[in-house]
Image 1 (cartoon, rainbow, N blue to C red):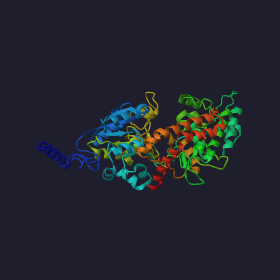
Image 2 (tube, rainbow, N blue to C red):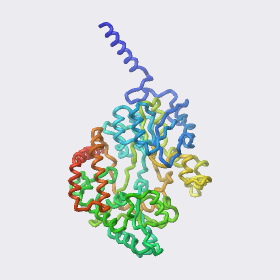
Image 3 (spheres, helix red, strand yellow):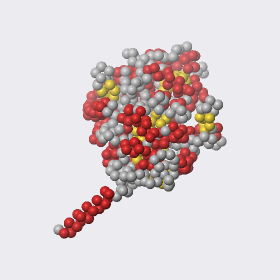
Image 4 (tube, rainbow, N blue to C red):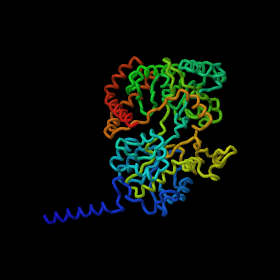
Length: 538
């Protein structure tokens, strides 16, 4: 009995010491007091050099070793914080990220690792990812300002438990060209040759595609023109959804929108309007007006055809930037009015593109300094450095005062593309990064004259106030990973089969019945609960 009492007293004493130790971590995973070497403002961030280990997603377009990239080498000198990068290629990112989280051997932070919202909540509730609310208030003035001025951004980052666990990848709200993503294009020269006005309706578009197929607009005497081509059939389907009254709250929440008659959440891929959309696209495909290999062709083949301007129309990014100077013939198309008068462009991403672009783990002994380190990239100086680099080394000002990349980047002495040369100095090519993409500093395809012109043409019919992605509880996430995945996979498969003609539309009722048997109602129960929370959090 006496031995048991001694053990209990010893354990109590150990707990007391742990609770009163000023160097011990609190429940949030942060130190109870900032380390003495931390500076709350200005540079360097810490008076004595510290080292942090970051797990980072590596896009194909970015450098193999960020330890050798000018951006982070110079930022190390500025901050006194040395980052050891563990870069994981995008192809294996989900697997390696999950292994890192399950192993217990955690990095100090995950950077550009695209942590899904379900995992942010899961590992946040478990304490693996630390809550950032207080740290943002004290050490992240740039992100705090954004949250204070943009309630929708704050809502997108705040989880049902009230915590913020991550820094996001964002787009400047006014940078609609970037937020739109791929846009519809048409061969303006062929319009002129064929004597056809810019299509304004889905019927006009059909007639134009037929004219391209039958009218030899390239004048070579061969039927080698491709009326419509794209990297996938989904590009065309997404573009046309708004012409059939679908996806009326944007594309961030797959398969659901609001029923315009009842105002209730609906699974729009079981509606008559969706059937009508698929029948229209099937008509185009069956008449040879869509590239017949679109379900199987590679991106390389798409680029080859685009560079030879074989397409009469497409849906993708800025053609000149993607295909080369010959693609100047492609101009932006407007939103097409559908057979029932619908006319809306719905592919508009919310400002928060990727909530899980940067998270801090409970292994981090310097969370305050880490927050200061990442917050710099949400202010003007940090965004300029992230996208443009350093004046006199990567960029200069032109006669109009605009920042432009220097000649050694735009015209590589090694014969590299602009992105390949840029990767020696900066790390943003490939996406997924924790910062804000702005027109002022971002020089990608979405900021090209062709893309800005295309965005302007679509702007009058752009969806207003698109939904941000809904958030789900851990239990809901498990169900969506099972039943939800089955539902979404089946819809994708059947969409392709209806369009290709592999399944006739006489099987539509069978399609609807199978959806119910797979578990559509359970799927929609979860979506409704998430939507209700989304509305209540506004």
